Image (tube, rainbow over all chains, first blue to last red; front, side, top):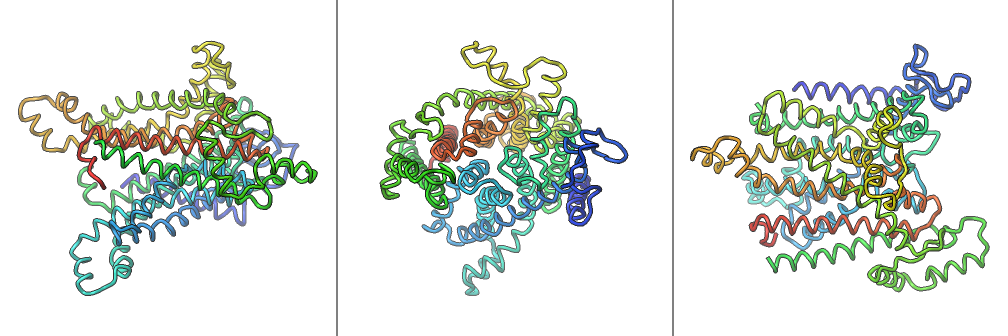
Length: 270
Length: 315
């Protein structure tokens, strides 16, 4: 339970930082102030300034917005496509359709998000949208697989059998009886994919395949800090810690939620 | 087993063809003419026409796909537009860095994760277990390229035990080369070791609850003996799956880590190719990595069936 609260607190803190950055940051992230460049953390600049004199705290807040937005939309794409596919596959278990969906899943699974991003970027150039698509596409088979697996066991339950004898169509049973029972599982998986999405976004923007300047992003801040790490280590520490804490928060939250929703696990752990 | 292997090989072939179609299709949708795209805005029409002929763009897409795939089967990946050298040779040179790096990282992650996972499971609920779970939770959250930067700061900049980057080449002797790959491999291995240790622990805990362990204890084996003789082998299946999956993530992760350490591997090749719009190189590297991922999944499937005969029946 404690893990859930720590995780929720961390995740909420980053969500608030991201939301606040829409209308207020301590300094303007786009304005350069060469006179006060490369300042270590101080009262005026809590996390110091970078080589252009930009305030690192303000950039972290702006970066939170990009990170959370990319990860959130990517989870949305994964759920929006993956869950229906998984439901259809489970409802038509063993059919050609089920087989096709699952083999298609295996195929997409063979393309790690980084490779999808490389392919898309090579063709359309780098952008945050490409990062979203790459991470989102990779999320689809994850959600499809989780949904199908859990839905299959629900299809064998008595209440689904009752609905079938009552003459309900498979599609209606999937939506009215199977899906609501998957909600807990999908929330937990969504939290995990959300944190993986933040890591993936950071990795992609680190190698230049994500959000482009002047949009602040944690991954690119790290890439820029790399040559200055010996004399301005705060430039590398702040974005790195932001990534670690937000991912850690979401993971703890996911684990906590799973334990909370699955009494079987709660018993085993106790 | 033979029937099973045959079915798996058939599905492997189908996956590879499907994957090659996807890669080919993505490169095909380049807005406008790929030759004009690769040459940039200031290209003369003659240069574009010459490149079109060289790329075989005057052929139809089906003929081009067939030429591309049959070429790859012969080891001919085409000629890099930027460097004017065969792509196959360029990839082979870079693979000599990326592949050993991924294998080194996989070995490190397995060597760390196995004992740690077993230790935590054997001391379930104790302080050791809680410590391992906390440390691995943190390890999963740390981006490997950031960890790599911290390693450079501590071990290269401050302690000066390692160089901050670069690769002397295998000609400089295996020791020098392995030394240059050590920090990158540690950076790659840490998050993977965290995941693997958690999987190892939970798989062991699951098998320790099984009846056959109780039987083993009842006939007089100590907890440690039961764990070593009966639980470990049965816990290996989920662990094998993750190791298989990790290898593909390590290959992809190596691409990013190479950037931190300025290693001239596949990653550097592909990012340079992207900025130079050298689509032939991008296409080949991506196809090669996808091929590796699919092949590893195939080998893991076969390994399962060898370990557990129950998995050989058709699914």
